[in-house]
Length: 352
Image (tube, rainbow, N blue to C red; front, top):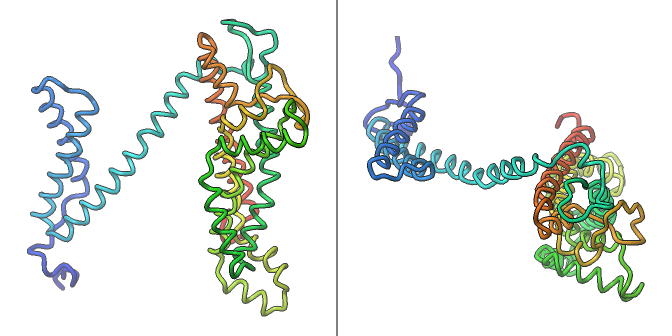
């Protein structure tokens, strides 16, 4: 019968003992109870204070106990794990609170009637009216922006990864970095000035907003697709070349097919980046009370502008604004779900 032998890296520890698996949960519960009692005595037993003090007591007590029982190496590992987990939970707080707030405030006016009616004939604090025209406008403008930006971004990324060398590639990379930081209002002003010079100052159309959003989408698409293409192993390219496949066909059949899932995800990130923009759409497409199906003629309603105008109006408009925000979040979630299914369908069989 052989005796248990500690790993060589732990021989320097005084003992080779472990805390039980339930220890972190026990320390967490005890720290919260102790923090509540301390703050209750102090007269300020609020939830944020209990959580903050409990977290500090948890880290301190678990680290000291682990150092005494398990040694310094294991204690350092537990401390790092605790800090990483705590940072993740801290980052979730604004996201979860935002979703709960929008869901709570937006659900009061959200209904099927709200989604299928427009604002024609709705004035003041009337409780009727909906966002059908804004949903249609948002989808049309965003789709047009994607049609403009995705091919440009995809071809630019392919050039930078597969062909780009020398000063031209460096200049394109620099310009993409500059475009990434362009404020949305600047993109709106550019589209407004461009169409004003061509069609006159009175021209308003959904295509103006699509061009403005495309300026914001393009650098995001380029960066994300570029990174996905660089992740494709060179061995796949070399194997294709060895079989006599030309480079353009290798890019289409091997590189793009392998990176399809990441490319679709990158496009969806770009869509999520621009679908909630308000400033460029205020300048370019404005707001109307009914559905406009023509991207090239007339003003067009969008959800961000609709929510802004309704909140600015006050009264029942505030409820419509929250419901419009909830609708926008649901649209983004639905588009991400569709993108997941598409990327799963086109991804290589081994990656599914």
